Length: 471
Image 1 (cartoon, helix red, strand yellow):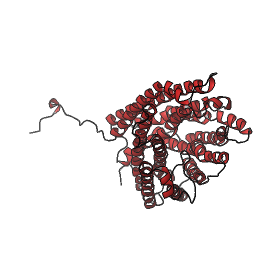
Image 2 (cartoon, one colour):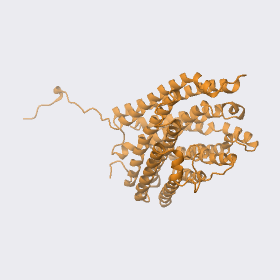
Image 3 (cartoon, helix red, strand yellow):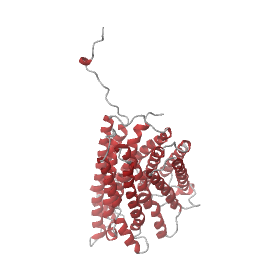
Image 4 (cartoon, rainbow, N blue to C red):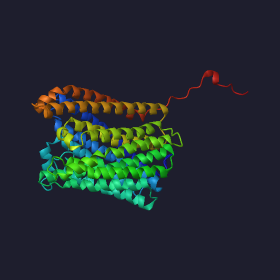
């Protein structure tokens, strides 16, 4: 048993965290490949064409975040429930199934033409492939369902046999929603409007619904540990945040229905409630800073504290502010599908989900390795990685926003709109700047990895301090 690990079964989280970070590196590398393909169209063609790079980039994002959520749940639920995990063996088994399925899927994308992959994996039996973010072959989708149900069962049984807290119950609700809503990935109606209507039930209600419950629970757990603030205070904030998130997120799905043939009333419902979606993220920002200011202890893991505070701020900016910028129908009429959408997506995913996973990894991994926190030198390096990644992501967002504004103006607003490719030539400078910012982000991620292997300098004793031996 590790010295600081309260329950040995929490060690299940370690391979999930390690895999999550490894896949994160892969996601960023494919993002950089895509960034170059925006300005050098035949870069790595035909080995990795743009559509394949994009599939790998987005699929790796989803998969590594799921690994991070699973690791977080396996780490925090035993502590919250004050009992061992129901079945560590099942957790390890699902880890390998998920990892192998994910690796085979990425290999399939890279090595087999997509149409051939669809034929090979039974897409003719149940057509589920070809939709954005849901490109996974049928066997992979089935595997995801199996892993998700086994995961929810394992966590649910652990919670049922132990203490029930607001954090564990909210987390469980989010995980159940994650598993149930993914089932709509199997529903692919022939009518395009109906298809898009239910497609958003996976894509939107994941990231702007049940994932927010998971995020809030993880953040609350870390804040309890690093601040020592009474659980009752944090749980009251948590209830407010998740209520706002569910009300605005579920009905706010309507802002995706503006232009797909859905009834006109969705312009009002979607507009009003999606305009309110910044509220839970603003509340989360206030929550984080309020808890840290009221802390009863100075936790030695300063890096985890920084990640927790950063999560609230960047989630509010990315998901809240940048989401609000183009969510109302009169604005979205011009901006829909432009680089402004990409700007919002990058900052929102980084601020809300990437950072909260890095928060729990920053807090839990040292404990999983037998110490309360990383050495001071390692934490300094990790905090450098925080600033490099966060600032570079802000610049990526600003460059994409600039590209999007110019794109909307030249392509959709002026009296003589220009063709798409002509506009792309005129925004190339933003794409080059975005690529440079992406390289800085990669440097920050590498520093994050290196920080876990840095040790403090050995203590040296001055010659004059050595006392002569007693005679």
